[in-house]
Each structure stands twice: as C-alpha cells, then as structure tokens.
Length: 222
Image (tube, rainbow, N blue to C red):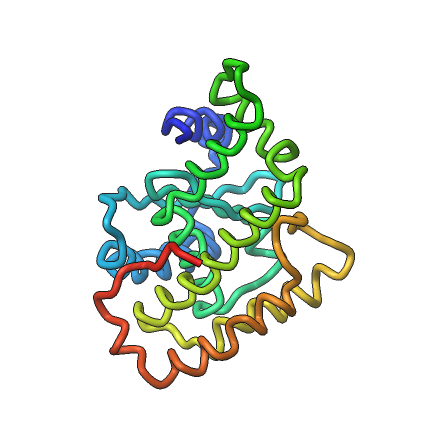
C-alpha cells in the first residue's frame, strides 16, 4: 500500500504554490458532494478510512484515489466535464469504492509479483503502475474488473447518499462525447458506452428501491 507520505510529497508543490483546495466553485461543489457521500461510505466499509478530498489547480486533468480514503480531483478535470452533483457523486463514489476495496493494494501487489525478486522502493513500484502491470491480458482483465466493481458500487454509494441514478450515469455520456480520441482514460478502462450499459439495470433497480440498500457494505467481489 502506498504510504500516506507519498501523496503528501506529490501534493506539496501544489500546496506551496497555493494551488490546493482553493475556494473555487469546483472545490465548493466537490466538497459539498463529498461530505454528503462520506457517512454512506463509512457505513458501507469494513475498514476505518480517513476520508479526505483534495482539489488541485495543477496542469493535469485527473481523478484518482489512494489507499486509506484519499481522493484527488483536479480543476482541469472538473472544468472539462462540468459535472452535475449527481454525476460528481458517481465519480466520487467510484473512487471511494476503489479505496474501500483496497484496489491500490491489489495493483501494487501485482507489480511486486511481476518484478520479483527485485527489491523495489514504493515510488519505483508506483512508476511501474503506468505500464508494467497492464502489459498482460490477465493483468488488464484484473484492472478492468476493479473498474467495473468501482462503477457498480460507486453508483450504489451515490444513490444511498441521496443522489439520482438516472442523472449520475449521464457522466458516461459526457465521457463518450469528449473522449472519442482516447482522451484521459487508458486501456484499463472499458469504453464509456460499455460502462454505461452495464449500469442500466443497476440504475433502474436503484431508482426503485434505494432504501433497501441502506446499511449494506460495498461488494468487492465480481
């Protein structure tokens, strides 16, 4: 699992330059949605996670989570997609599901297994995450399965927090319109159209019985 200090080192230049958690409309919206999601995420997790949201004004368009409940969004990412609250709840729920299911630990473990018996520092392993673990079809399938779980459970978290599933899944329409050239998302993510289609039945069921899901934990299985 990546150490908390690694994320702090990554964010330190942004904090130093006043580009972290600035009082912008993007930050205020993200914090509002995030705070509404946290109680539901706590109920749904067997882990004691310390949820923290960071919104930075760096140059990169990015959205990701780190072990322990840390979620990072960038202003360029939020500017690009201009998400409604319900769509943003799906995105945040997706990242929360990654943290609850400890997917980062799984990815790092895969890198370590493939590079044994070398002794790698954690920062070296994280650099390899961009290429090494995704080379084989088996690894790619594993990462895509993690993304599928995060989509499904992220939508459930959003609905249980009070957001509308019919609006939330429109996030994938925006992805499809804006990412026709490949865009931000690597081969580890299925196409937006496929991701949306997988959630269609889920969306309909959640729209009818959201209260029935209260208190249930995130399902980290397939």
